[in-house]
Length: 508
Image (cartoon, rainbow, N blue to C red):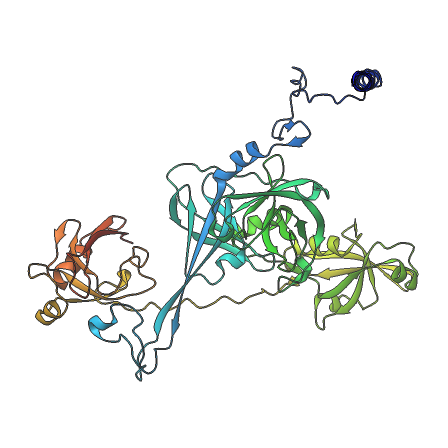
């Protein structure tokens, strides 16, 4: 028994000695893990460059960047009013108030105007100047009857100052009572693949969502627009989703380098943004003319690769290869033919098709450009009088206004309370006002939640007992002032005292 205990003691001592020896050895070889020390403060003379995001440890913090950029990012509400044919046949009521007055439009009658319908959509945007200019995508507001900008909890009516379907950009203007925060426009040409970028927008109606990634590629053409020759997208893995369209892509300086435009639904984190250089090139025309006029050559061109350069007897792949010349175009009139290689424009070297497209598009129609071309190994010059590139989309006609009852801008159909209406629908005997029969989708009361069957009893605190009093009260309000309409809503089954609320609208 004593012998066994001695052997256990010896074994334990040997193990303890081995552990101590291992620790000493590891410390001597510098293998013991070192604790993470806090980052040392920067020396007084080594302050980070202004506008950049400071590094914390090894990774950048994007919190300061987001804090600076978010106040200038807006959401866009686009409202489109259209017309649809009346319902045919009979069926279930389309609203709980149909049985108040019977079906509103059970069958389209000859000569009857089609009913309005309303479609609401939206996207993102950003302010580019203190006086209220806003950038978004053209597809966000295309065809909209009314455009509004939501910023800092307020909703502003927006004027569409200019659109350019070819680049999918649009310029809006809002009027604010004080200067607005805005984002400066940066330099997308200096971006490098791998640079950090931040996308800000309103994906799936989630306001002010921030995502971060890198520039994945540049110069992408994805066939998104009607004229793919102007596509020069930045590809990024910063998440861009439905609702992000029109929002800013910013660099670490807080400058806009792109406008988020599209995503690839078949993959994760493949998004595309219009370079800010494209915006800067067309912004003056959007402000001054509302549209973009571009010079037009009338050729189809492609880049040269090694095999094509060899086939055409060229020393390198610089230049734009003409594959087709449009009949009766400026290029045909100047004598260009397919197979020509354009190597210079106005003395500027053409490395790729992008150089030629960007330069010619920046010139005004009617300007002359001088092209240096190679044809069968011989160099010559051609002077071309530029035409104007056709607009991608024709302007749509303005929809005709639907006449309302009494006050057109309110977009209401209404009637006075009759004894039968009061008795059939349980309205209090002492209640006076007008009953709403129809609310047009274009009506400002649509957004206030007023529906058929509601009753308006007061205008700006004054009781209105009939249609005449209602129209006089509304008509007396000066332009730009607010109307307080007191609305009562009763259960059609006569239960309860009814719900009262104020609908606020502004007189145009």
